[in-house]
Length: 52
Image (cartoon, rainbow, N blue to C red; front, side, top):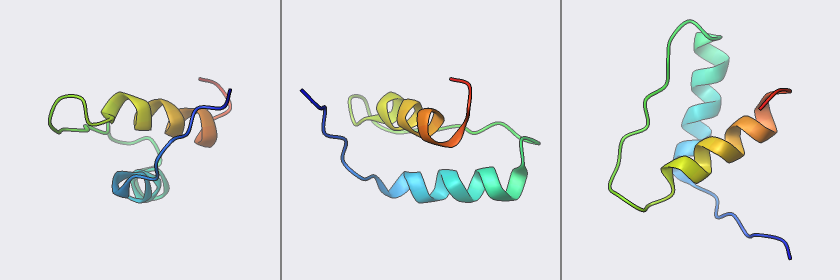
């Protein structure tokens, strides 16, 4: 069974951060509880980096 991941607005900002900063700074994701911060961070890492 495939888990459905909703597209989040933050994902495009994370891509921009990766392109612009190139690992020079850390990324902090802030938000309310249980809104998917960890899920979007894990999905970003899986798709955008070879090692996760």
